[in-house]
Image (cartoon, rainbow, N blue to C red; front, side, top):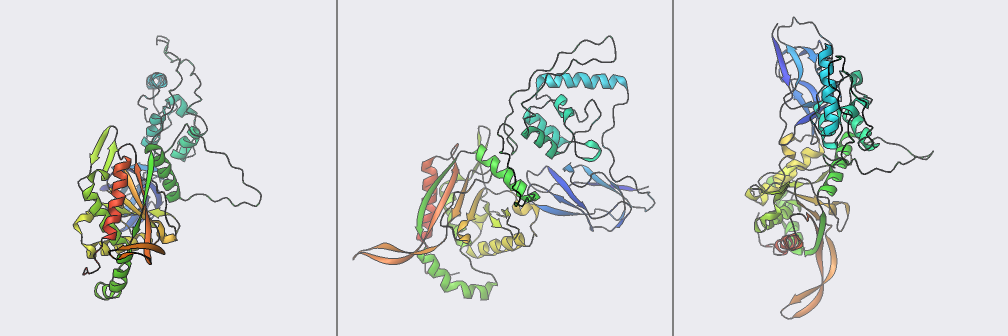
Length: 456
């Protein structure tokens, strides 16, 4: 019987796992080459995975809502059509079979409970399987195998899910560590094992904080309770992580963009007729940001421990609101290599694909600096949160007509000008006030110096 293993493919830079959100084919179904097989979701984007072979789906190795790592076999397809469909989910870890292995696991558990953050085996003494994601969270939070074994799993066959372990941590599980009872192996000749020591205080990381408790809110009789969707949970997790990783500072400048407004009004109809594209303000703003990054390249960096990674490429993320109310950040790759025409097309394509849920994983990867347009909603300024692992983000306020003092060789006078605020949030670990303030001032300078006679 010829069988093809379908593995979870790499779906972009830094993406190491994905959640199975829906199987599009059932066990026993016939499937064609490149026909959609399964829907998966990463922390970046949802995607359909096509079948790599034609045949009969005989195994699904992960259930809906389970997390698979890149490279894991998620399904098996028989190419000769003779296979008999098997159980939907195959247990990926067997219970230890002999007393000796049980003793060995008990000893390892006791040692792990003493060390706190020792490597956790995928199988506990009870035979319960722990996924790589659950073990990774446990290690980061200093949980021992003894504590993992006390968690009641809500997954298939009682398996502990990401939600289970995060709920356990949020309820104080990481801090309330009871001393483990002395391990008594079956063999009488085995040496006694020391009881476990209290776990070390949990260290924040991975987008969640075990040492900060959220308030418990009681809903009133007339209140409506709505469950967050998957994307909103990811956004919330990412935002909380960013505010605790980076000390945020925000600098503000006001820019006179009258020249840009007049120039765009003059050219937007001809641009639409010639290019079939809307000429928005966004590509003009991004062009100014790119120029300023070239002047101040230490804005285009990331932090890894005590190291600063200076990015070679200038990839600009543009925060885009979705019809659902959620937010996604598609990325303009190598924005410094594009002219204004190219930027306008790139911006429009990404925005349309985002709104129609047609973004590819690579469309939201590799950003080095982000721009968010709060002016779209009529806001004059904002204090944006840094999109990790970047170190800065620029909020563009609404363009308003206001009275302003205009300086001329013949004297000052009052006139009507188009102005906007730029709000620049930056990571004070590596971007000081001088650099952060000079950068946003330079962006404003490029906007104010825009050439009104420019051709496009």
